[in-house]
Image (cartoon, rainbow, N blue to C red; front, side, top):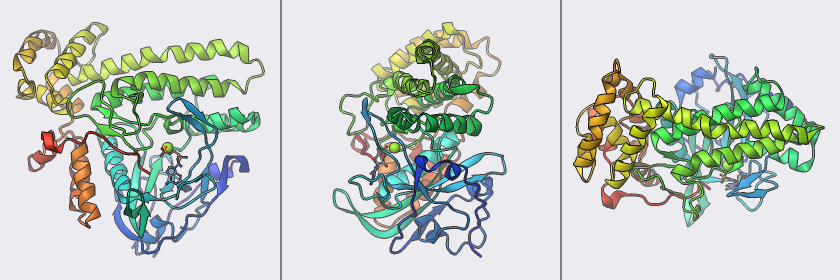
Length: 472
Ligand code: AMP
Ligand code: MG
């Protein structure tokens, strides 16, 4: 019995300008590392008696009904427009419509060179594949919209980076792989027919109630505003918020140099290539607005009277900072136990965050401890917490069940960077136990799990990982 995937490939039915046909390149000795059976079932995939799963998810055997393609896009990278990017190391096998009615892409990442590889080898090494598997599934469990991981395989071939590393392929699942950059490439080329076609496609697929390009812009704005506020609420730093990594569906996409912060510091940057701190934690809202402005610029090109549309588009974009603030307020309000935070509560929240920054408080553990004991111990000077707490307790008196609100809003477990690095180091030596343990614990981030207390602990000074590297 082979793996059966009920494909329905809408993107491959678009005109040829949207992609290149591209079978994955076979690898020497595929070995399955992980298969996400729950996600598979949700997607309508019958795992069957899957002897050939490693072959399928390595790209060695195409499942029936797949139409492998690489997608075209461009984008602004660190503010500079790059006229052609595209899937340089990824192949979209197709889509399924799941038992929940949701259409999802199935993409192999690290599956060999494509028409868009430029100088790259089209491959991925084990480290970034496992990082993306763990972190994307953890984000999902945390309740943050995200692409997901269906499978990971070893290729049995080396990939050359700093030295020879074990190669791997990730099977990524997404609401779609439409990016801001997918719109930008057609706009930049003046291919208005394709731009219109893409706009219709995105509306049908993601926002069927949206009316026209400006309706789409509004819907993407709302989804991205929710997303960025969710990132802020879990201390997530994406690291490469380029427009090609900004998804139309409002999902987190591209887990390259991303990381969660330990100690709260709004200027935190992990990515080794982000030397200017463009994508620092506290810059993420501004960058999301900047990226939406690039989408607006691209969408406008399809109107005959562009001048007239500039004003409408500008209004839509200019409303975004306030939307992010509203989402941020709701999210951080819940983190301190407020079921319906009001504008005047913002001061209480920012005051706590300031004190946390001044006192090297661990972001996740401080908020988690608010519903229990020990929050003050997170502060180098616990008195800084005590003096904040008085006003907070006053405010909580009018809340019906702040404890419950906080426990739902403040995870005990996040994929801490030092644990990810330790997990990768073990996997390179052939030990996948830490990888599987992380997945198991992070699937229930809001539950106390006493056996996993070590994974909730902040890094010791010698364990801190100061920088992360792009997942290439
Ligand atoms: P990213 O930084 O992952 O968003 O990738 C930026 C661009 O570089 C995309 O077009 C990728 O497809 C391409 N790329 C990244 N890694 C590789 C690789 N190993 N081989 C070919 N293309 C790559
Ligand atoms: Mg990318």
